[in-house]
Figure 1: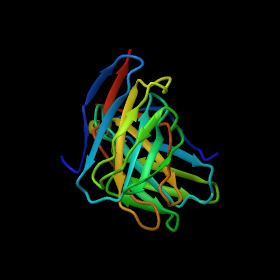
Figure 2: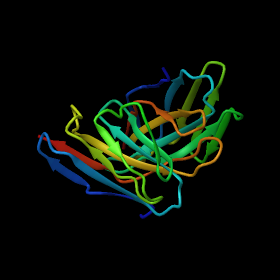
Figure 3: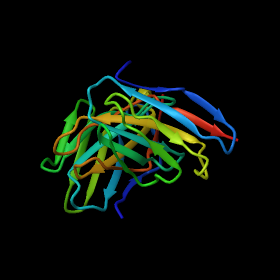
Amino acid sequence: GENVEQHPSTLSVQEGDSAVIKCTYSDSASNYFPWYKQELGKRPQLIIDIRSNVGEKKDQRIAVTLNKTAKHFSLHITETQPEDSAVYFCAASKGGFKTIFGAGTRLFVKA
Amino acid sequence: DGGITQSPKYLFRKEGQNVTLSCEQNLNHDAMYWYRQDPGQGLRLIYYSQIVNDFQKGDIAEGYSVSREKKESFPLTVTSAQKNPTAFYLCASSISGTGAHEQYFGPGTRLTVT
């Protein structure tokens, strides 16, 4: 069935370093790829998304890349800060109302 | 921090009892969703509703029921048939239309069944 795999499950970086989280999806019809950030005890919130007609999207320190051929997409956070510490979820959707989420990556940014 | 609200934040129940979780949104969204979040498993879809008086099963609907009598409200009932109900439950909403859209999440309800 439809599946989104996310790696790594835990990531620890030094403040100022970059962090990369990778996801692969199984359904080639997927065309919308959002990334959500969930801080401890809070609700998930969208931080960036990309659609299948775009290969890369940037928003300040955050960027997402999409490789449709390989069915991979990645989140890149540059110049990490302690407030970036959270759980990050990737997801894939092909329209309609069903979104498949990855299992999440817990990011620790050490000051 | 309005938009979509869930109540209560924490809920404790004895095994064998049904319990209803509340979800309300004032975003004028047509679509609403219920997810279950367990450690290390991401978000799994329980039910979703595209429009009032209509809803569809998600991947893990067994032991759950929903209703959608009003656009703003999408309550979830966890029945005694749900074998492992202890979890964090998230409600979400999104606009409708063609293509997929951002989902807005509520703050969640943590249910503990003993």
